[in-house]
Amino acid sequence: MINLEHRPDRRDKIAAQSARLGVDLQFFPAVNGYAASDDFFDTRFARSGPLGLLGTGDKACTLSHFNALEAFCAGDCSYCLMVEDDAIISAELGLWLGDLSWWPRGADVVKLEAYEQAGLVVLLGPDHSCHLGRSLAPLWSRHAGTCGYMISKAGARAALAQSDHVDVPIDHLLFNGNISALARQLNVYQLYPALFKQTPHEGTSDVIGLRKRPKGVARLAQELRRGLGEVRRLPIQISQRLFRGGLIEAIQFADTPKHAKPA
Image 1 (tube, rainbow, N blue to C red):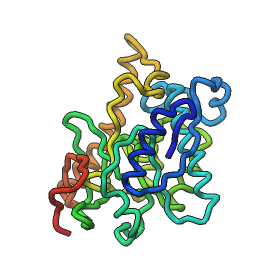
Image 2 (cartoon, rainbow, N blue to C red):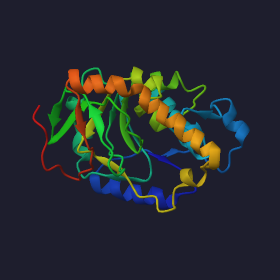
Image 3 (cartoon, helix red, strand yellow):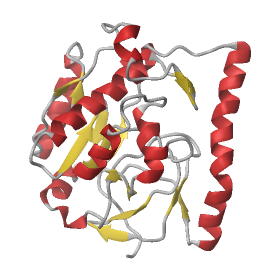
Image 4 (tube, rainbow, N blue to C red):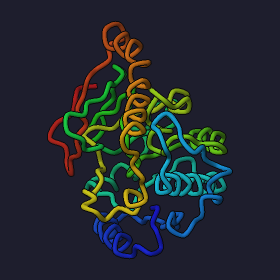
């Protein structure tokens, strides 16, 4: 559980959730973007990338994940649950952590989150499996957010191998194959209905508070760069949809699932 030391409000809230669920989360100190200088990030991050300028908050969040992944790789566990401190967690999380027989063969990362954005759908591969009323399938398109995911040691090492000069935030690095070579390299699965969703920020996010939005021509150029990344992958995704059995799904959070697709 990644948490800024100056946000005990978030730590207490997530600790109360996990205590009710009987899940023992280990708190890991996040990098404070307000306290770090630009020079602190310069050796690890590009100034801008396919999504435009990288804000200090996005850099701090990304580095927080890298630091936690390094700690995971230094230990003996084979898998790690990564959670951000603004997550809303399903009551069934403990059931999924208590038995990992559901883990897809060959998977590097399983995204457990539903990123709540109006009209957002994702492309999933046809290789579905079911467990405890939820479905798992390969994730073939962009799906932002890193408030809840599980990663294998091989997946963590692959991410850390590309952590020296990052040009996109951690969620796009892991879950946006349109612009991230790492996301295309990793074998990523999506769980749905999801076990996690992000709490609405309502002005309380430290990451958003550190973002600097370009204006005018610079903003237009940034949006064009983002759109180009999507367009480049579009022919591949159309082919996956038409000829490889890809499925379009709107990923939603469910405290307890009402139904699941047949395996």
